Image (cartoon, rainbow, N blue to C red):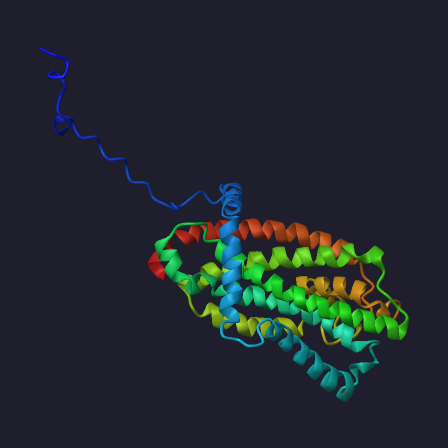
Length: 309
């Protein structure tokens, strides 16, 4: 018998057993997996960039003015608050009140946009969630990235206002304080990203969350020292309530921007005299821990996103 005739025909060869099915995005332990998710997000960083661009394109689709709209709302708010509160209600005694307001409005607009966009990010992209696997955290992170792009334009307006105020008053920002708003911005990003992850996951299961966050942000705005000075709050509240008021993370973020971009308030009764660096340091540590917790909750919840959407 020849070697060729001794071969078994391919059709007669025993069939190979199928590989076992592997569940994509299987549930993980609550206390393990944060590092692996972070590495996975880094691997999908190009997709994250594309999602950020998609967020911006969808927002300004068929718009003639485009990115100008991201500046129009805070500028209109600035004009209204400057006219009504600064002139009609007497808050205009605060030096260069327009710069003072815009320090808070710019940071608040970033914060509120991150939370609002992150909350609906999973539901808005339900088609992709059902069809393709990649880290679901990319959706809230893309909302954060798009909000940061818009914040960049508002920061340019704030810098221009600083130049005008400096030329008028002769008081310019102290570059030695530049790390303070940078640290404040970092705290804002970490904290809002953590809250955004929780809201994005909760909104999949309960759509009322996207409406509730609008109400919460409205109240949160008025308990943040943006259009009024904090010295009035310290006089109006008892000590314990004032300390609770200062526990608002956005208050310290606003203070950090005012310290640098609003030099006209230095040494006046309208300036916050507390230790802003210390507050921001504590907030950063707490926000990082909160981000870990939020991601783990998101990881436990995302396994059923496709079924719920």
